[in-house]
Picture 1: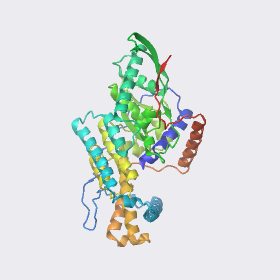
Picture 2: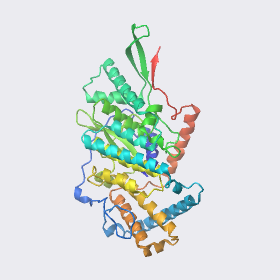
Picture 3: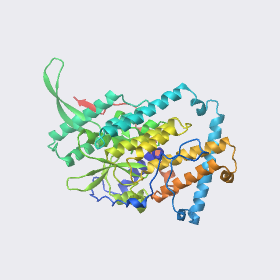
Picture 4: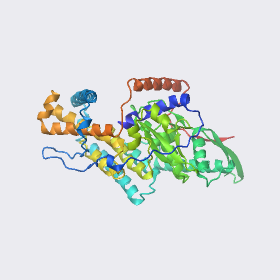
Length: 465
């Protein structure tokens, strides 16, 4: 759910920052105080269900009845659940009637091979965290995750070479422009310029006849790719390998590029989330915490995100938005990305692998406040319920209460959705999503007119004769 709309809110940020924040302004902010741990109930993701269930289920926290007795919210939520389950059931029935139904894929040898690839990727992410919990490799984690989905834009060798070349270029530019290679503020400035501006350096090289010479080399800036920015046609549009290979990205991939460059230059940087949006946070030498928008090259304070991305005070207090993810949490979050890729590629699976991803990642979020995990769990529960009532031909949703397993699933789904609300998550105001999509499509048409492709591999490095 989160990734499907991730670039929408990046686009929203891109389109609205200019009117409210001066480009280039840097605002130091103090991170929000952490909530008290006792605010949230523990979540046991590995519990067993009753004897009537044939699958393992998460044991989500049971909330107070006050969540359900607010009449307006209750009615709104009930309608939402009915519409959601009804649409899922119809979708499942249509899938079952198709000649080449995804359901048949489950019985093929290819399914077993694909499942093994995802399982191996999850195992590799676990090893990364076990090997060096305080400083796991983001470069490894991102490539492992994207390779599991298949057909990344870069081979591992191309990926490593490009990151090494980029870091070397940045260091050369810093030296030639009198920046301090040991100063973290200077390193962050250099990364930001590398991503947003056309930079030039002088490099020594050896010609074919063996003589020493110098040349001017330049690097082109990255750009926002409006073509399929929702990732509906190609999920790889969210990938960091795609952004590095083409120069075009959005608010999922461009912050990841920043983090990879920071890792190469050994300067601390953190990932942060707003609703369906990602950004970079880092600490300046004077102790100020800075929010950096890799898509616009702007520094934006927390208040802007809270106002324009509809972040509630509860969401800030709980830490689901505008908190910082260190490298350990970023790698753990890759496990959830892996689950999301699995859902996209293998939607009719029984959910066991998705549960494994949820279980392995939850150890690194002791406050039980990774909203992404709860979105995925709701999707899993919704899928189980829709398939079950379709197979049992339960057409009256009121009759769900008469089926113990279906009713248990429905209640757990409701409780998970209630917990998401308790964490402070709020749906978008009506019309916002549609407006952003229309604007994105218009920008995509403009991009096509100037023949700027974010899908074709191209070298951002070049020599100036």
